[in-house]
Image (cartoon, rainbow, N blue to C red; front, side, top):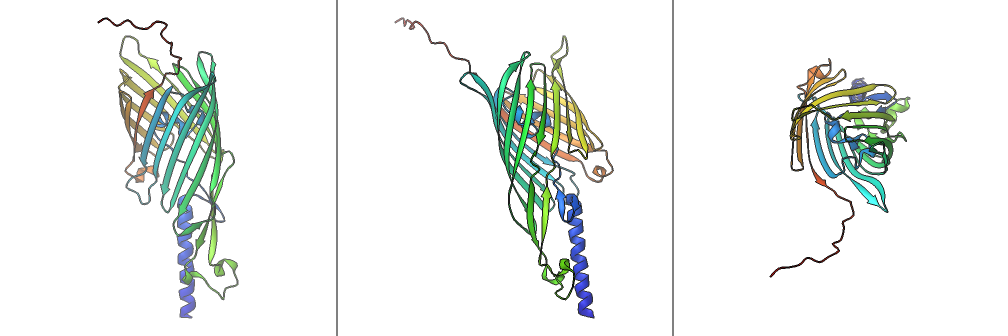
Length: 329
């Protein structure tokens, strides 16, 4: 009798741990869960994370690195890190945009990593340029206490329009809705060989993480303030997986294209404060999310840093001198 009670207690304790784990990660049904969406506050500085067609849109060779600590002060808070590089390219008189990106997301016992390549075709339109692009991403993940069964491959697509006074884009992310599968081994004390229930005698169980298809809209502008050295930089991002809509509205004030201050609002989540500087191609920006929702108020807020470097590119053909220079002795 004591052994049976101990066995039942072990099973209940294990089930409770599984329920807590899957609830934290967003359980859908039968050990199938959805990957938590990563949302960077300085999305306008790393647009290729959300739209592959943004590759090459700046006209520069652009490098960016970002780190985000979300909901600090809470246990197992999410941590996101990203690296991106992109540039325009001209081949045979045609314009292209290419980019590389890497992303890491940790949340409790789950860690997701991915790397992707973006290729887009760019053509002139209405005083600006329109780029259509595709991205292929290879993903890998780790779930504590589990073994990985396979890896996933994601496909993204997007359109991005860049003009000297505004930009806008639309993209579809994870269009093939990839699934990551794990095999989780159950502790021996929770396995009851005398039980008639299959779930009680199985030594392993499958856990699946499904990434939902997402539509992302982004837009921003550059509005010079007359008779001043300031300019207003409004921007917005909206994301939807057809179950939930998320978005952020941002307004920044930049002085001499060097220093900028900004404030934003992420719907039902946080008020975002930003400070950034860019000097001779070097960029660094910091943002702090002030929690406003019932869940995020339990934390000390979120911190994010974006840093990078941009190199000016000039693909215009260089004219050869018709005459040799005359050297005067």
